[in-house]
Amino acid sequence: MMTHDQPELKGHAAAAHTRYTSRAAIFKALLLLIPAILCSTTGQLFLKMGMSQVGDFAFTPEAILAVLPQVIFNPVIWLGMAGFVGGTIFWLAVLSRAPLSLAYPILALSYFVVVIEAWLILGEPLTWQLLLGVAIIFAGVVIVGLSQEPH
Image 1 (cartoon, helix red, strand yellow):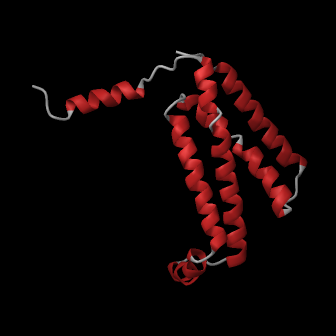
Image 2 (cartoon, one colour):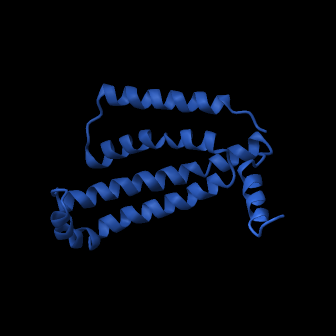
Image 3 (cartoon, one colour):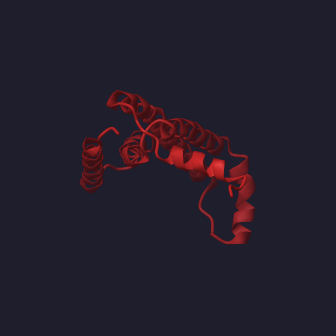
């Protein structure tokens, strides 16, 4: 006997095994990662700038409640949140069009972008260890990208 939720479950199973039509279609979908990464990393940059204005605080309930108004009413923090919302919208578009096992590792390129943004805008130092780590991440992304075959 079929219950009322079985057709819905069948739909979920089909959605989980989406067939991707071509490399071109997947590549086009992955291009949406560019604005997703830029929005998210720029959001991080604004959050850092906003929290630098607020200052550090003890991680206790009392201290969090005391600093919360400064966080809530800081326009730079709101810009950071807006970056995350924008990044999430593009990320959802990518998820609807590309394999997660390919898209998520490529999202790691955000490490490179945030390092460059922090260096250019916040004046954070670029060390050889940091650059080497980012280069290793980039090499991993390339390897993952080359390993994918369309279904």
